[in-house]
Image 1 (cartoon, rainbow, N blue to C red):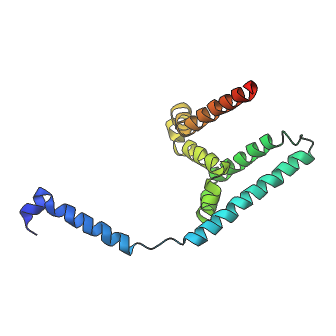
Image 2 (tube, rainbow, N blue to C red; image 1 turned 120 degrees about the vertical axis):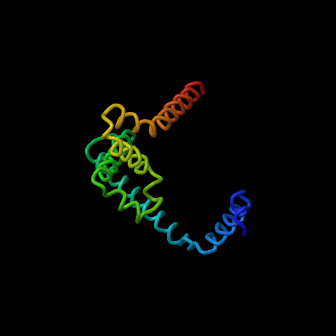
Image 3 (cartoon, rainbow, N blue to C red; image 1 turned 180 degrees about the horizontal axis):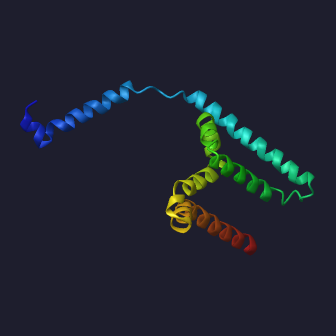
Length: 155
């Protein structure tokens, strides 16, 4: 290939396409069945832990209908605590999507953002970056709850 074609950009596109196809062939395939099973069982363990915490709140006298609220708050607290100690990422590396999908993944991502930007200050660092991620989810949850409550009240 001549230097003129390379400068014009014609030869670069051919080489990039060749490299991308070669790279795709050489890239190792992920073990899908293993990843699916690990995520399934890890998510099951999170649910089992949540059920155990729920049963503790019920045994402490919290009504069954209301025991879910402190249970979710406790699971969120535990995930945030494990993230703060740097343990959650190691567990998530092993468990895969089983930990990322439930509320624990949301708690981990919010806590990670707060930790990452804490040097920028409490308001502009921790607060704004943490709610940059969580804000849209919180707003969507509040609006959805309002609409569902309004439909429930009308029916």
